[in-house]
Image (cartoon, helix red, strand yellow):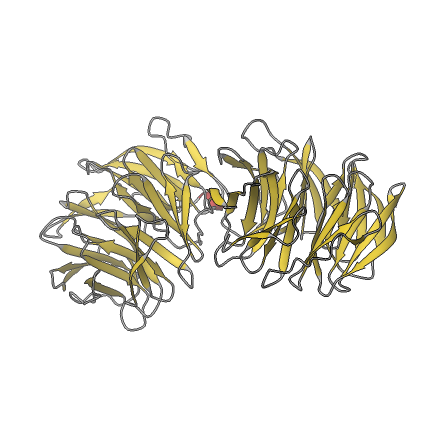
Length: 607
């Protein structure tokens, strides 16, 4: 029985205020690249739902760029390491690994023949290095600037030149090969943040935090003039040339992007991207007909030249670890909640997404559940909130319903028949109905998870301090304690089967244990213990025949009730990242989330 990865609903770029982000473009025009944590994310520019993730770096990656041939990608991380890997094979086989700098790499540029590479950043001994991509042999010296270098570009035509932008406010020019320092350009009055040659190499542009953009001759490096006066009211984070070299796109911290006519240095159009801090524009890329920019929020905007007032598409999602996952009643929409308090709604078939609007939690969400009409969430701001499902692919907004919980919620489930929501917090078990609390009960243990048996009404609460699953019965709207099921480790999750006949619980002792709900006895003698670390979450297939478990060991294991001795392991389901939540869309499709900020769909056939 084989499994396959059906889709990756990819993470957004990880952004940081005051720091430019570098997007990489595929020379063939198909894909674009960005980074998030240890991952390099490759997305199809026409169908961004199609994505691939490279996870072989051992620390955070800052930049990734395609070689001009399109066969390789080079990525640089915060330790100063560069990895060169192929784009042809699914496994992305490593070609070379070098350590050109002793600190974070901020930008990478390839020569037009894909033979040479220049990297810049904040090294201990130097701020830049140029070398052969095959051997790592140095082909010159990148020096002459006194502070870390932020950006680099290679002239695409002969005679070759390299330009670098530095935090000492200068742009440096190097001639070669072998490359030697020629001169610095000192027009900028604040950090120089981006340098880019035009496609023909006849010009290059530099942009800085002084809001200015300058144009220079590509061969002699003489100043040709300034674009705009200044180009932006805030710092300019990036520039991108049109394929014909006649226009230039700029993005700025003043929350605008602007399109410039290079010949006249006049603005063609302005894209106003919003009014909040999150609308600052930290990166841009011009690829074929697509003009992409990245907001500080991580959103990727597809600008519409014919309608500058509104992007024709915005890619949303998460760039912080995903903590919870919930499905709507029809199981065609996936809701994911993240560490920073945002909830995203995904179409399970297409990957089209939108973010729930309005006044949300603003902090980590620990509970997420759906019924026919609403999405309910609880977060570590100690509140319970409610949102509508929205129409079509558009997500709804939080309603003006906020219930103060009194202490930190740990999970949440709903008893649909009676419309009662159970919220275990660190101190008590709360029952909510409508817009208010209807009962509360103090507990002597610390809850971690909750599941309601939709057939009998039984409520299972996992405990972390006492290593027990506590079973409760209803008395009106209150819960009364019943059986206790003892484990050898803290309970991390528990779920009743769709038919209510079984309860599965997982723990920090790497075990997944199945109980019959008739008397809450072990359902079989076979121990499910093939995970190598704490099991974080469990989920039932709709037919109640299989259980999936996700773990700190990055694996998902599928267990079969009919054949307890057999199991299927999805290794490295979220590489270098623990599985935080999972569920089944149908009897052959699992959806999982991880700390890598990605949501993945898996096909696991029954036969």
